[in-house]
Length: 215
Image (cartoon, rainbow, N blue to C red; front, side, top):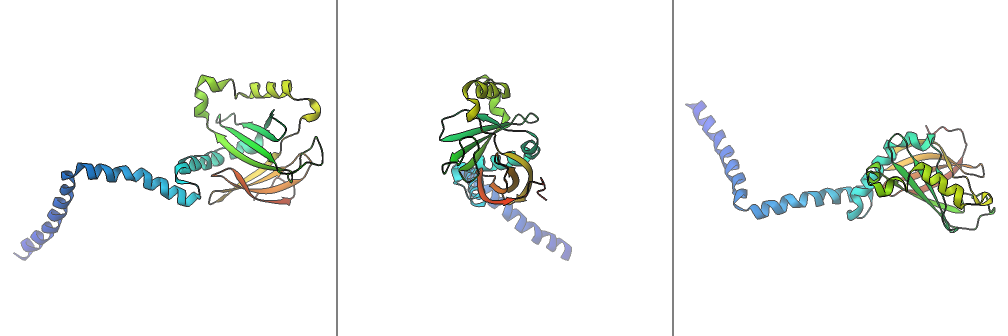
């Protein structure tokens, strides 16, 4: 008898919870509205975590993923310089294994001491990954192929204006959306740069050795 009463008492709360859950079915519009808020809440969470505007949070997370996925490519592949006007420089690093392309724009912050060799003091880089999926469209395939970029450089730049792009010697994931890379600039100097992988900007830069050791 005691066992039966105990079983009955346990079933009552369960039945109440079930009935309360079924009440939501009476308000399908409200239920749909709540479910519709879930992607927005996820976007807001990512935005708070990364420090970027909510509308760009998903893209920031994608940029972070591409930085980590292509770390080996950063070291093994030399970027190609793309001709532009003289106020900015642009390089393209094409990862053959993934098909992703890292576009880096170097904004000139001061007048370089040499017309041929740029220094890190005169340039401020900001990078953006372009995922391989976009190249499935035929309009982009020829435009961004390594052969097309290289041919464009040879045809449109004079020899005395070509500046070698900075070379990445090593990388290390620091966590928290940060990536350490050791970079050698055309003037021979090496710097340890910390990249915000969500937005592709350099957070800090300190001069260091050129030993290729980021550990």
